[in-house]
Amino acid sequence: MTELRTLYPPIEPYETGMLDVGDGHSIYYERVGTRGAKPAVFLHGGPGGGISADHRRLFDPARYDLLLFDQRGCGRSTPHAELEANTTWHLVADIERLRVLAGAERWLVFGGSWGSTLALAYAEKFPERVSELILRGIFMATPDEARWYYQRGASQMFPDKWERFLAPIPEAERGDLIAAYNRRLTGDDVQAQLEAAKAWSLWEGETITLLPSADLSSAHADDHFAIAFARIENHYFSHDCWLEPQQLLRDAGRLHGMKGVIVHGRYDMPCPARYAWDLHKAWPDAELHLIEGAGHAYTEPGILDQLIKATDRFA
Image 1 (tube, one colour):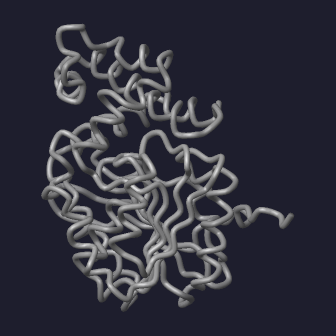
Image 2: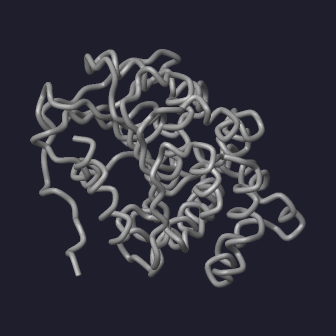
């Protein structure tokens, strides 16, 4: 049996900065690898998740000039947890600003989970700017997917964890949990906001891997992380991510001729595999890898193996 590929060794950025994108927002970005090598951009999940040092390690630093950034309102971007002027289309415009800053004519776009949504929105708007697409844990940002994960669906697999997710919301408000959470996450009661944020964030942290991960749970329980993650995610899902019904699937024809790889865990609970299947059918140029024995996270061994193979191949 061949050995599964794993992350490249830890690496520090060769450049970091803050880019003023207007509307009061400044976004943190960093560049790693070899200046002038193959350009690529990494789009993190959430929305509101931020980048981590391990995300830098998905690419061969000798062959890539990789830009990573914290999307509006999260990570080291400022102002923290800000919802004003924070929509899918603001982020798509930010990616274009960063491409110009990086001096790239076209670049490889890599996105996982919400990052796959954002990558698709960007690639469908600017197909001429994308050399290849690598997508993991496909999320098409449809109301169906939001209901599956935040109303009824994944709840059936995790009744113990679901009970903790329901706890901050009175029974009378549980008919629309995204709306009930929105009231608390945008309300003036700081204590209620933090309680709701941690419950929202932990629900995800504890259901994204096939087997429990103490590291992911503790990261999602951190107050600073949870506030941005929960507020921004809920804000996006409360507005259907500013996408028209089935927009990403409808416009998949714009990806015609674009090389791509779709990697999806068979037992992905936040993002059911049928959406990855639907995308593959609408965009047959892309290879689909449905990974057995894997959940949602990029760190799942079979998922990570295919992602590294993809970045290597496109280098």
